[in-house]
Image (cartoon, rainbow, N blue to C red; front, side, top):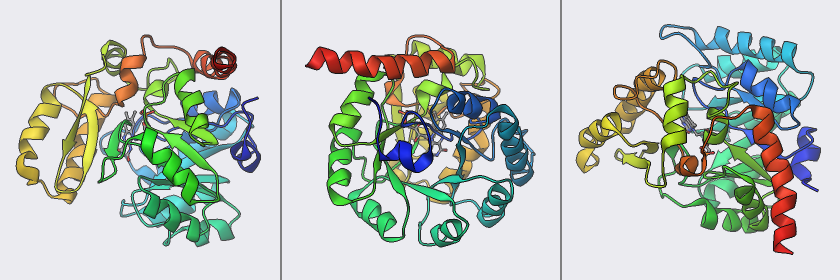
Length: 318
Ligand SMILES: Cc1cc2nc3c(=O)[nH]c(=O)nc-3n(C[C@H](O)[C@H](O)[C@H](O)COP(=O)(O)O)c2cc1C
């Protein structure tokens, strides 16, 4: 049985979390995942116009998710944004019970969220950060390996080695993230001690995801060498290989790009690629697991493939 403390804590059937991907993780996607027994996550930028307001958009997305599912779902808040307190307040007043945080210190907001009876899940890319998050009282951590899409940890530790070390270092449940795209990855994550998985790229290539068809098609077409990591002074991001990523790499040449400029670029140009399909102009985050993904599926098909495949892979191993 695919069960763990993650299911108990979050009140979900299967310990499968859909990543709160910027621009893409909207109510339709999150509700579809939650309705299939996983945990859907919405993000403040989901489907937003270039000039849109993230706080009101987050409220709208949460409201709509409530109307599409009566199962648990959460929001993903990137702690590096200036209006983070407004976003957290919006989530709370709209009745959100699970918040995933990343890109900042869990010391700043965990207490506030816990005081409001919210389950807090913090994303970490090192053992030190996992221990720090546990000390701040988060309910679980997501250990995000270098294989995953988008911004990556400074030290580039892959999921396969990060995960067991984080599992050994903390008492709270650990959710694996980065490179998990099918049931083999799910079983491997559990074998390494994870009690749940957090999946981005596989859910981006679903019918329910608002991503432009050109981006979904690019995921499907990507082979094992289809992504690259572009780095700034300290920041890295895993992107689809192509003109846009190469141009960014040139700009970041010699690690000259300041983190702030780098984040701004990612922010400004990601929408063009993900929502408008302008892959040569915009920045398309994509996990290395894209090579495993061969077709756009429905969320129900992805969940079935993971849940049923989990038992099939296990029986093959016996
Ligand atoms: C299209 C897309 C955009 C993403 N953008 C960001 C981002 O801006 N910052 C970030 O920290 N993670 C970002 N992520 C990473 C996800 O939150 C998640 O950690 C990751 O997708 C998990 O790895 P996987 O893609 O191999 O499943 C993005 C993922 C996708 C697919």
